[in-house]
Amino acid sequence: MIVVMLVSLRVKNFAIAEDVTVEFRHGLNVITGETGAGKSILIAALGLILGERAEKSLVRTGESQCLVEAVFQPATAQTVNAILEEAGLDPIDDGALVVRRSVATDGPGRVHVNDSAATVGVLKTIGQVLVDLHGPHDHQSLLNPEYQLQILDAFGNLDVLRSAYEEIFEIRQNLQARLHALDGEDLHISEQLDLLTHQINEIETAEISVQDQKSIETEHTRASNAQQILEQANMACDALTEGEASAFEQMTVVQRALKGLREIVEDSDAWIADAEAIAIQIQELSRSLQHSVADMESSPDRMLFLENRKMVYENLKRKYGSGVEEILAHLEKAQQRKHDLETRDEQVQELGEELERINGFLRERGGELGKRRRAAAKRLVKKITSALHDLGFSQGAFEVNFAECKPKANGMESVDFGFAPNPGEAMCPLRAIASSGEISRVMLATKAVLAEHDKIPVLIFDEIDANLGGEMGNAVGSKLAHVAEGHQVICITHLPQVAVHGASHYAVAKEVHNRRTFTRILQLDSDGRVDEIARMLGGEKLTTVTREHARQMLEKSERIASREAG
Image (cartoon, rainbow, N blue to C red):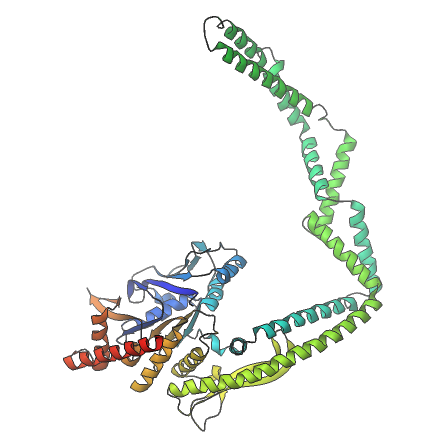
């Protein structure tokens, strides 16, 4: 099941692409076109979306900036939202993830994720979980030994065993940290105890709390502004009830006037009631103001007390934290640290015994994990080697090399995938392979084997058919279609034998208008696919023979796909 799909890619003022939008589909999407037509533009544009370095030379001649926009549609947003939350960006819920990146000829570029400004680093992190791009632009997770270990564990269904090991390792790390803290490397034990005792006494003596701090600040603010508060309150009371023309006196006039209407106006009783209510409210407001400011003039002693309390809080914040909560948290840690030091010898012995016991568990779990990894590696080697034979490396070999190491978070060994394309050649790490065509086919062989285990949903292959003949092209196309059953696959290909396996087919062409070059990309219908496959078979001059050959290739591919699906 595909959990994320690249729905569309828009490229504007990017090299020879003025404004091009491609809407991709599930399954295998193949992109074809003549050399130089602009297929590489799509890969370069996707590279920008994945956080690769932006070159100002990418901007179309005569324009001030270029824009790349990609829309992803996740079935579940949990993984992406975790990245967005860590970056301080809004979650996407169940909607689309829209990534935009612009490059300017003069000035900095911009990155936006769902209309919120973001960084290139965020793009790289998102790209690592959404897209694997294989080709000359090297967004290739398979070359990373850490990712190779993840692949091996996924293939061997070792996630539960690995998680159990990781839990024990984390416990071990915490025990080691506690022992290190008790060693007192920074200060002698007595000096640490003196410092902790001083800190604890200083905080405890202050008797601070969030409620007390708020009360002190509120009272201090009122006392500091007592004169202004009194003046304004007295002015309000005069206007309400105390002055000669106060609001209350005016309401008395209003009530008398309304009572004079009682005999001749039917609604006058309601008006009189409203006027009485207003008069009462005026009196209550005046009394409330007078009561509030009755004790406003605070004594000098009280003001000094408030100033001193504020200084206590400010002093503690400078030393122990930005707020009361952090200061009290520091107090709790200091108390625990003091207790640990006072009982240091007993705790060191207990922690040492516990660490020895945990190390035993760690070796046991790590040993079992390593044993299972080696068994899984044998099966993985066999399957990937077989897939490589199908993809043109008839004598090629694949292996998983193990190296023992000190216990670390993911196990007690490291792995390195190795590959030898021809007999007599030395096995070398995948990352040392120079040919993009070779590494792409190794990746394809791996993806075909791991299709049910790999969690990266969008796979992009560029030049995967480099230096391949027709029969090998059929094998590559078949493998791509197999991988596309559980992933969205986008493949740029030069071979018609690969292209016929696509569920969706796009053709890239180059046109010249008014001495300017433009790239256009079209999704082909059935007749269009026949013409494009025929062009790939026989060049620009299409003949009845090449068209018929192209039609037969497409029909054969459809029959194979239908048979495998059934």
